[in-house]
Length: 126
Image (cartoon, rainbow, N blue to C red; front, side, top):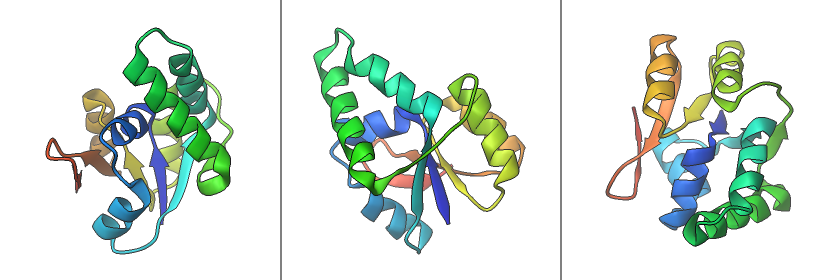
């Protein structure tokens, strides 16, 4: 199963020091193929150059992880949320990983499988 990662999901996981690969494998009962859309990578690059140190550190760590080859970068155009919704519509069997409330609502309304972070630090199906 492919797991598409959203910008805020990746940032939160790195801030909270969550091993995404292990946590997703545990939740989904299979080893997921991790992917992220190019607009989300661009958002991470902007955040990595930002003023907030914690956000900058998390974004840089996420970019290093993505560049290490563990995450497939999928080319997409447009804004991140719209790209994710369009990608999810074309990939019904994938899990979409996001903490964005409005995006979660839009995705679940279309029948997508959505994963989000728990406040306790784990993952759950939303």
